[in-house]
Image (cartoon, rainbow over all chains, first blue to last red; front, side, top):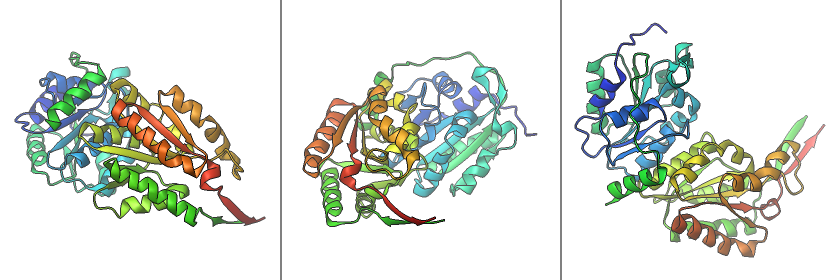
Length: 192
Length: 185
């Protein structure tokens, strides 16, 4: 797809997580998890290291459990493609506090940069639209990212944003891989 | 060939156990019920759908349910997944969430492919289900008789949420009634 792919993923995520207040974040395995860790570790981040295809579903379950707080599921195009059915499910539930953001580099960056389906014809935002997502936005510049950050906190969703980002793998910033620790830390922070 | 599904489990016995399971959900503060429908669960699903205090979520695929309930737990909600045995295979990779994070997970599975099964395509997953669940780190309880149901589900709820453990309760095909088809060739 001929789209503007110039945004730096680390800058995008740092911007999205700025002034986060009570935002709860689920990050998809691989680069989205490293990006969120690079923006600053936080007990209200739950980093996935596996369970590919599950980020959006996990964020939906959390959004229903915590309807008063904004919930962000942030992940790559590969993870979202593996769990497209979750967009249908989100459409049926329509939680206003849920945002799904795709960092779309159109490739499997972790495994040798093979092109993903978003490079070969699939528009994830069209899929989200077809699944009755309330607000769907395509983003290709930093102004768009700023708008998403504001929308995400307004709880007017569900919001789906597909952000085209540049290819390339920045340094891996690795948060804890101890799932028991991460889940207990998250629950303690959210439920206290 | 015409094929009609003639006999969904729809009798007083089914109504009664569905009601008793639903009442246990309420007593155990189950807040989210996620499911891929099965005829054997239909009464229970309807009871959950009409309860304003329960979020009922129809899934596109069972693997979503594993991730969904992990998210629900992270946000403080107890949940349960209703599915049939053919959906267990869809969950395999997602079960790593439960074991890696040591999360509670509870599922109530209606069995196919084990007792008077009409459809041979159901046999493999039905026969594999108990062992597959165990391989994936879940504890498996099985219910063959209606009078075992309440105490078995009670045990499963305690182990899951008090012990932060994945637990599956299998409702045998004999218990829920085999699915009958009448057809003409």
